[in-house]
Image 1 (cartoon, rainbow, N blue to C red):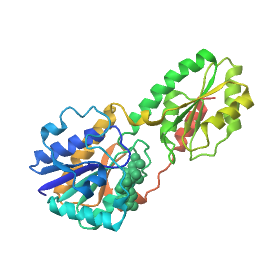
Image 2 (cartoon, protein in one colour):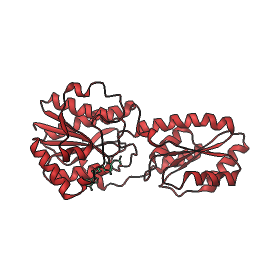
Image 3 (tube, rainbow, N blue to C red):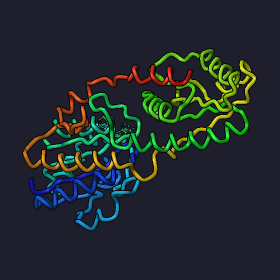
Image 4 (cartoon, rainbow, N blue to C red):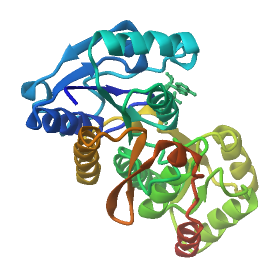
Length: 319
Ligand code: ATP
């Protein structure tokens, strides 16, 4: 393994920079040349590639976003796109690739591996929607951001005696709503994995008000109904003024938590070691408090399980 290429793909996630730093420094430590590929698979197709050194990754461990920039690349999903990427890989003498991204990016990584390019995937996405790993890089930073927002909204919710819907990311995976809802003490948590029960949400608002509770926070995963229509319905059914806060892309940014930096550093380090050992088509993960790697195909086939136990605890604690 003389040359490794690294790229970030899909939605950005805090901790991607810490992972890039780990990949670059572990490569250099092992006397392997390391190339940074810009803007995801776009850069791989276009040859937007630069050699990196120790200084390229100085002062980035604490920064959100990705210094390599990221993109979604439709062309890479075609055979022609893959062919172009394989040509660039050959021209730049790239012997192995490390792909930082979510499940879409991993599908691309799998194709490269099947085409004979040693490739390792590192899970980076705030949604925590990859079934084979307990946590993805960026998830806990997003949760912290939401918890911080909920605390602030709770202040104003209490002052005015309002109900507040806080819409968070996670179109197909309710983990951000669940974890931040529990940590933020939300009265109701609405996720795609569980049927929405508006009457139960309304009962919580009314019961809370009747016992003198001033605030009412509803953590809503995006895509589960329309937040504004939900607010209108709650207002009509409870008489409580109901406001909506859509957190949006604020959840993608910010300095990564220590946990995200640690798993990013360990996974990035291990990904390089695996390539040096001659492994390919592997997915890095975090399971039962350990860094793991498994076949990328197997990783992609594992369905994300919803933590129903945690959901029930959150319900009990918000009675
Ligand atoms: P996030 O979870 O943050 O959305 P992601 O990696 O899942 O991240 P996607 O937009 O699904 O984000 O995928 C990122 C890129 O990976 C795509 O733009 C495309 O270039 C590549 N990709 C996705 N699916 C495939 C596929 N089936 N084959 C080849 N490449 C793919």
